[in-house]
Length: 121
Image (cartoon, rainbow, N blue to C red):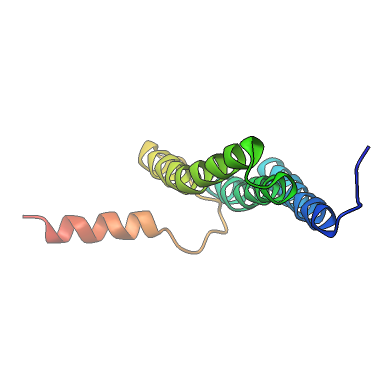
C-alpha cells in the first residue's frame, strides 16, 4: 500500500513516475528509431534520465538511510558511466562501418577523422 500521507512521499512518487515515463519513451525509441546511432541516443538520454529520476525519487522517499545512500551511489555511477559508454559504443559502431540512416544530415565522426588525417604528419 502506498502511503501518500506526507507531502515528501507524494513528491517522491511523482518524480519516480516521471522517471518511469522517460524510461518507457526511451524503450520505445530503442525499438522504433532507424539506426544504431539514433537508438543509442534514445537509450542514453531517455533511459539515463529516467533511471536517475527513479533513483532520486527513492532518495527523496527514504532519506539518507541505507536505501537512500545506495540510491545516491547508483545515481552517481549511472550518471558517470552511461554517457561514456554510449560514446564508446557509437564510436566503435562508426569504426566498424555501421551506416548512418539515409536521412542523417551530419557525420561528425567522419569529419573529425578527415580533419585528424590532414593534421597528422
